[in-house]
Every structure is written in C-alpha cells, then in structure tokens.
Image (cartoon, rainbow, N blue to C red):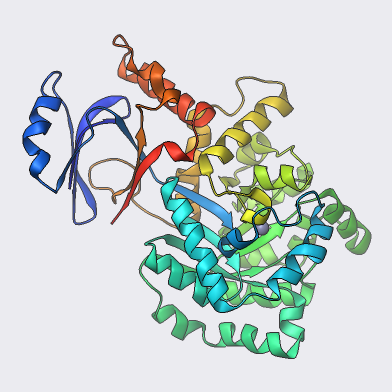
Length: 413
Ligand SMILES: [Zn+2]
C-alpha cells in the first residue's frame, strides 16, 4: 500500500507499507504531490490523501473491560462500591459467553474507529474476548479477572482452576498479537492468600499482574484500618512487587503517599490513569502524574469499561488527563499535548511489550489517519507554517479541539 500526500510530523510525505512494515517515507516535492497522485488513482494499492490526512502511531487503551459496552451508563450517579454491588455485579451475573463476545466486538469496533489498536483487558470468559479481538484484528492483553468468590464458589472455582490448569494449552492456541494475564480484581475483593497465589502464577509464567489499585479514598482508608498500612505497602508486604516486578499493572492509582510512590518507582511498575471513569464515579481527580513519572513509574492511559467511562475514545481521555494536570497544579504548562500523546502510545507499547512501533521506516505498520479538513484543524492550512509549527499546532488541535470521530482509517497489518 502507498499512502500519498499525507502529513507525518508536519511534513507532507508519501508512505509505503510492504508486508506489514513501513518500508519507505519520502517527502513530497512541493507542487508535485497532488498532480502525481491523480495518475495513481486507479491503482487500488495507492491511497491519495490530497494533503488532507495526518498519520499518527496507533494508541493503546491500557485499562478496559471490553464487554461492558453492553452496560453504557449503567448505574449512573452511584459511587463505586454501590455502583459495583447494586448495578454491575447483578448485571454481570446474567452475562453469557455470547453476550461477552458481542459486547467485545462492539468495543473493538469503537476502539479501531478512534485510533486504538491495542488494549489491556480485565474480564471473565476470556475466550469470548479473545475471539472478538482476533476477528477485529486487535492486539493486546486479555486477563482473567478473579475475586475470592471465583476461588470459593464451587461453580465459579471450576472455571477459575480451568484457566490456571489449562494455561499452557490456551497459550499455544492464542491468535497473533494476543497474550494472557492474570487480574485479581482489587485488594478489597481478593484476600492476601489468593493475591499471593496469583502473583506466584504470574511470576512462574512471566505474566502481567493487572489489578485495580487505590481507586478510591475509601479503599485506602479501609486498607489502613484492616492492615495498618496503605494499599501499596500492603501489597509490598505480601511480596507481590518482588514476584511480579515490572509486570505489575495498577489501574486507577489515584490515592498514594510518598512512600507508596517510591515503592512503585523502585519496581518500575506500570500504572494506568483512567480520568473519565474516576470523574464519573466521583473517585477523585488528583492523579500524581509528575511524581509517579519522576519516581520511574511507567504512566499509561486508559478509559476503563463503558459502564463508567461511557466511551472508549482515547483522544477524549488524553484531553481530560491533560486538563486535570493543568487544573489541579494551577499550571497551564503542565502535561502538554506531545507528552500526553506519548503516554497514550509509547508508554502503552512499553507496558505491552510491543516493539518497533511508531511511524518510521522499518517499524510495524500500526497507525491511524486524521481528517484535517475538519473544523478543528482549520488553523493548519495557513501557508507560512514551518513543519515544526504545523506539527505542534496539529497535536494541540487533535487533543484539545477534536474527538475520535476525526479519524478516518486505522491501519494494522
Ligand atoms: Zn476497571
């Protein structure tokens, strides 16, 4: 495939993809590109972008419950614990594997159409999510979500143990681009005994350990009451970080003190900020981005499931993350557009072990095209902009002015 006359880093370029790899990026000589592309319009392997598309590396949604597209806006107005127990858990008890498959299909359609090609999912019936991901050519991690009930209730325990016992066989049949992980739901729903068991399993198989962590102030206060220490110190005392190290992925990560941030940084873990979900459920908004980044934590971005975030639009999530940093720090320069975009792409690639991504020769073709004829991008069509100025303006317009619907095409091979 040849994409002609599209912008890359502020430069009008032609981009060639061969066998799933970007094999060439050539600058377009001024005045030649559009004329030249008309000649190639009959060739189905050539797409002429007429200087109205901008290519960017695809995004990674680092915390999802994909099938929850079925529950958009469910329990709206309830705080987390009431929302979970009165609305979400009773709904989930009725789900069939086919429901989960159909919910996940819808999620992956939405992700792809808004520039996301990889995800980090936490749910049950992993085989349904895997099937949907393969059909939609999505990559990422599918993790089995477990609570104590999944070990103790006889019917559920059967399924849980099947996941752990059949792990090797399941892995050997996974579609391209999908890996497995284990996901204890949270410290308030999984006992220390089971957290240790899951961490041992993750350590033995080199798997990510994905958990909801310090999502609410109540979680932190209850942990202090029950264990005498805050959540991260509690997990450290259980030996979880020593076992899983960099494979630890903590979703939400809102309520930390300095000691906890130091522990997370020392182990170079990944955390996932889910700003829309946190705001919708009234869980909090002071995400300590600078502190976590400076301590050595890999900070990534996610939407959470659609029952709390209502959509899977990572452009919206980037905007809200950036605005919250500016607002809570009283600093308009905090978390600028280029940095929040790297959080949604490069930091996600690092967490998922996705090597060789980005728009450059030799990298995997994994990118999306933005329609810059749309109103948010009018400012880019001034004649006297340098490539650097145009690039900076583009990222600002994308994150603060546009939404995921400005994306016309998402390419993965
Ligand atoms: Zn979640």
